[in-house]
Length: 466
View 1 (cartoon, rainbow, N blue to C red):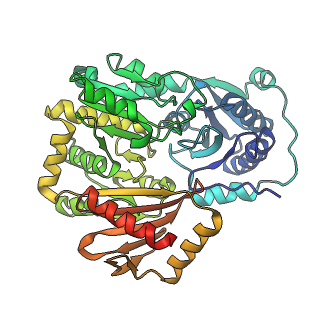
View 2 (view 1 turned 120 degrees about the vertical axis):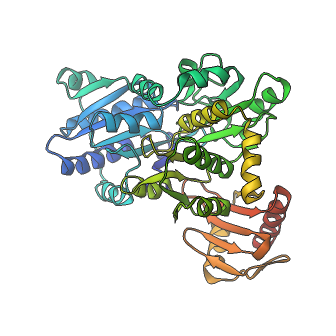
View 3 (view 1 turned 135 degrees about the vertical axis):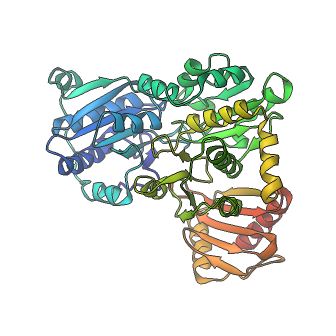
C-alpha cells in the first residue's frame, strides 16, 4: 500500500497518480490533528500556486481543516510560498499550507507545511503530522460556502500583504531607478504578479498563467532559462536578469552579459551587502553543498558559520532561535535578516538590485570585488537520472568507503553530514547525494574554475557508473 511520506521540502507526487483529493484529505486531516494540539482555537493559512488543480486541492484542504475546528485564512488566487509564510506570521496563525511542488516538473503537485513564525515547519512537526496520517479514506467535508457562512473559512489577500511588506523594507526609488534594466522570468510561476506591480518598467518573460510551464520544470537553473540570457545579451538596455521558480522561493540570477550567476556567488554578494551597507551582523547558516568560499569570507568578516543538512527546514531552525544574518542553500533558496525565516527568490532579487543601485556597480563588478578578496572559484553539478538499483548501489559504496580515487583525483578525507563529500586536496571537493525530492543522484564539485570542476565531475561520473 502507498505510504504518504514528506521529503526534504514537503510531500510531492504526480497529479492523479498519488497526488489526489483523497490523499490530500488524509494529509489535511493529519495536519488538523496536529493543529488541534497547538491551540484550543487553531488558525491556519492556506494557499496554492500556479500548478494544475491548485485551487481544487487548496479548497479541499481548507474544508477538511474547517471541519475539524480550524479557522482557515484561504488565499484568493495564486500565491507564492513566501506569501503564505508571511501570512502565517502576520495573521498569528499556528501554521500555513501551500499547495505546490515548487520546482518539480509540471506533472507534480505538493503540500508544504509552514510554521507560525513564517518559515518551514521543523522535522519534528513533519514527523508528528506523518504519524497522524491514516490508511483509511477520509470522507469529504461540507461545501466551501458552508464554512464561509460560519466564518470558519475567511478569504485573505496575501499578495497585497506581501507587496506592502516589500515596500516598507526597500528603497523603492533606488529600485525604480534601474528597474528598466531588469529582465524578470517568472517561469509561469507564482511570482509573476509581484514584479509587474512593484517594478512596472521591468521586462517580463513567462509571466502568464500556464500550469503546464510549457513542459519545462520551473527550476531557475541555466538550462531552463535560455530566453532571459538571450534577451540580456542582445539588448544593451538590460543590466541583470532575475528568475524565480514555481512557488517563487528560489532565485536564479544573470549578470549584464547574460551569464548565469549561481547561488554560491549570490550568497557571497548578499553577505557583503548586508554587512558593508546595512551594517548587519549575525551567523551564516549554510547547507552542506555550499561553496567553501562562504566560510572563507565569514572568517575574514569575523562571522560564525554553521553547516547543516540539506533542506531549508534545518537552516530555519537556527533562524528562529539565533541571530542569523543569512541562511542559504546551493539550490537557490536564501533567507536574510530583516525578513521572515523563509526562502524568497523575489526578495533576494530585490536586495541584489538595491545593491547595484546603491553602489552603481554591475553584478560582475561586485563579484570581481569578492574575487579580489577570496579568489575565484566555481561549483558545478550533474543531476544523474538513474534507476533505483544503480543509485542505491552507488550510495552503499559511498557508505562503505569504497571510493579512494576518482580517476587521477585522490580522496584525502570524507564528510557525511548529508550525502558524501570527498575532499581532493588542492583540486577541491566532490559531493554525492541522492535528491530528497526527485529520483535523481546529485553530484557536485568545487574547484578553481568551471573547467576544473567539470573535470572532477566527469572523473566521478566515470568511476561510479563503470
